[in-house]
Length: 436
Ligand code: HSE
Image 1 (cartoon, rainbow, N blue to C red):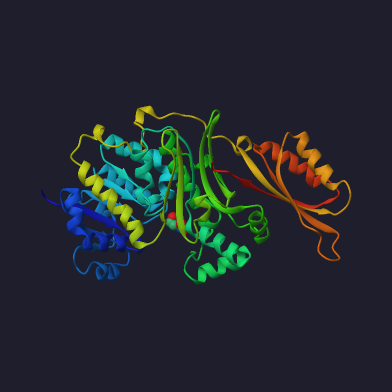
Image 2: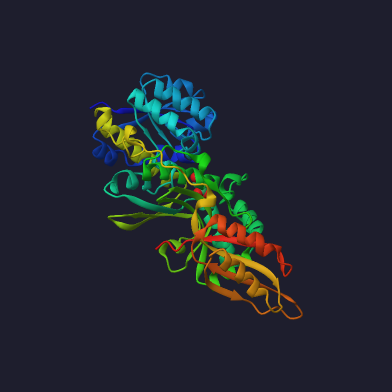
């Protein structure tokens, strides 16, 4: 059978990994795919570097349009990133009848519905295993391996940069700003780390997983997005004393009223496997009604780990390219006419537990006032920690863990607590999930 021809848009870290792994494992990949997969054309603005990386083994151009318009190309791999030119090129490739492989989570989380619709109409595939958790085959697991299940929830550590920072903050007792600088120096964090540290990257990935898990359109605009920039080393320490770790989790949960879709720092019991995922590693925990809990762990970024996911998509497409479009695996796991419009819940209606830290005057009645406010809001306290004030200090920290309640209840209770004359400054609130 004649080789399937691939055009690569962008030969940076992941692109060069894809080129190298495909070449190194060509024989085995061909035995799996049933025909050779050849990158015959590469588009990159830095053509000199692209030529060097590809050793003259394929055509190198600076204009990506030459790839998406080339009738010889069967599959386009988009590794440019962002929503601008990348969207344009993906839409053109689809319009030209090409299958697309992309690692672009931002693009799919924001424009996925339009892209999948165009692909569906044209009868081509858009594959995106590399868009979520790098080398971990979580898309495949959700879309195919767990297809028997009614997925109940997903909770993932899906951003390596923030997990690295949180691990360092815990290990070394350092504050966020100090660790971020160190992470940038070591190359673990980007020069502009905004998308990572503000939770946006994780929210893109959680959005994509929520669509596949529940058969919904992608709705990034409805996700609650909160990063780790305000997290203090003090809270990591107190959480530890209570038997918890703090992780940036991407959560998608089915509830009777709608879907929770949220990214925020979260306390999780230290004894859970996922709580022990350290450094830049990723992990996704999925709860299905039949299978129970399954955990997927691995590298969420990097040249060859991400290439592993890109090439898995190339092989899938190669195997399915000749199948009738209606016999292929649907982009978002559910048949396009079987998608549902279950609402994504506003954050005020999300139900979870909370860690609260407040600085209070060490005098009679303070604790009683605080617990009265919580009781009046039907918020039950699960655990409590109060430090002895430091020598010569008249104020101290009170830390409370609550049982589950709706976010709107805790928000109004916190406003009342902050209004007490004995409470100093703001109450720190971090959500807590048992993940059991
Ligand atoms: N920047 C991401 C991370 C990897 O730190 O995990 C690509 O999404």
